[in-house]
Length: 144
Image (cartoon, rainbow, N blue to C red):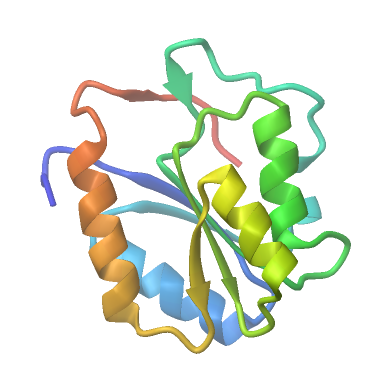
């Protein structure tokens, strides 16, 4: 990881223990980490259109569980994309993956992590994605 770059991640997971594990993993990598028990608990869920300036994004990564209160993770990702969200690195976690969900994730370009997943598998995806993030990219200057 480029130690001059601080990456930002939004994690949506209703299981507190998994949320904490992911928070520690990304915090240890030097990320700015925001965790939420479900999409409705995050301000970006309620906006009707992406408010990030054209050349910016609210985060570098969004990782969401599939089965959460109020909204499924795949629906949340699809909704964010339809709003014009510019986050490029999207991932879905689930212990209950069906063919239709896998097809939707593939169509949306979403990485899928079947639960239980190995943190090493996620780390490989993260390292690969970090290498593709332009060093001069800017994140929106807003916080939750």
